Length: 192
Image (tube, rainbow, N blue to C red; front, side, top):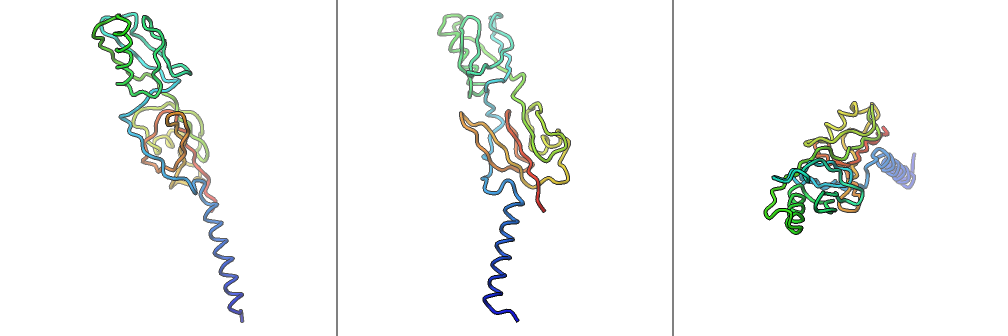
C-alpha cells in the first residue's frame, strides 16, 4: 500500500508531466493574440507598387515603387516620403508637394495599390513559401493558397509576425484573422 507522501509525489510528477506536455503541444504558447488591423487602413511600405494619377498633369501620373527609404521620386516635385501613410494620406502629401512647388494650385491626386508586399507562410503547410497579397485575405485563405495543413499541423491557432511602424509584432491568430501585406504566418507542429 502506498503511503500518502508517495501518492502526493506521484501526483506532483504526473501534474508536472502534464504541464510539460501541454506546453510542448503549442508553438504559440505564451504569445498574446495579434491586434487586428483594419483593412480599410491599409498603409504603404517599401516594396509596394502604386499608381498615381494627377488630373491635368501627365508627367506625374504613372506607376511607382516605394523605395527602401519609404519614398517615391515624382517628376516635378522630387522625393516624397510616404511610408506608413494610408492611401488618402499619400494623396494629400503629393497634392501638398505639387501646390508648394507651384506646379498646380488645386491638384486632384488619386493613388491606387498595384502590387503590395507578399505574405509568407511557413511551417506545417503543404507548400510553404511567398504568396501574393490580395485584399480581404484571411489566415484561412492564406493556408488554402499554401495547399492546406499537413497532418501534423496545429490547426486551432497560428502565429503571425507583422511590421507595425518600425517594429515587428508577433501574436496568435485564428483562421478568421485578416492578413496584411508583408505578414509572416507560421503554422506550428502539434506534438500529440
